Amino acid sequence: MIAPARLLCAVGLSVWSTTTVAGQARATGALTQELRRHVLDERFDVVSSLNGLPAGVRAELRMLFNSKTLDIHDAGTKLRATVQVAGAKSRTLVAAGCSRDDCLLYYELAGSTRRWRVVLIHWTPEVTTLEWGGAAPGNLSTIDEVCGALLSGRIKGSAGPW
Image (cartoon, rainbow, N blue to C red; front, side):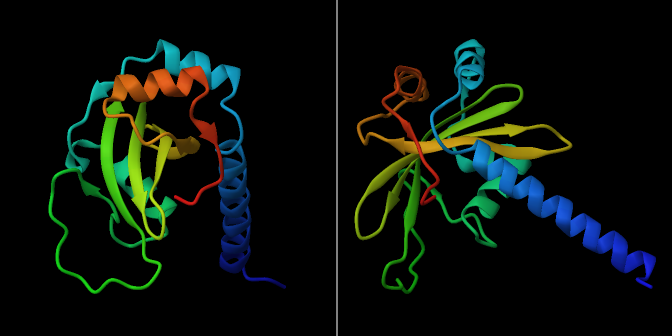
């Protein structure tokens, strides 16, 4: 017989794994009509630094980046001197905006090649989830430009790399 604590742990891990996989599946592909309408109806206030993001959004980024630290820095800040590992990625926040329950972030992902990514993260005090993410053009500089590119289809949904 399985001990109740072990059974509860096994069920919890199963639900968490399913939720994580379902969330990742929803976060890829084309922007759904529902999310498109949602973004169109939102008012994203400019967030000028990572510290201005809700704590849940920063935690979701750490999970998304598979990192214990927030492996992204604000534009214009100098990186601390670190040993660069071959193939390591550097992320720089270019533009961000948050509404009352969503944050839209546009950042540069530098590595062997430079790429730009957009993520839409839904957040509440209870739960924060990646709603959608995609590959973006590199010539955007404001959150309004990011929203325009997203709604026009210039930002293509993908599964990463984040």
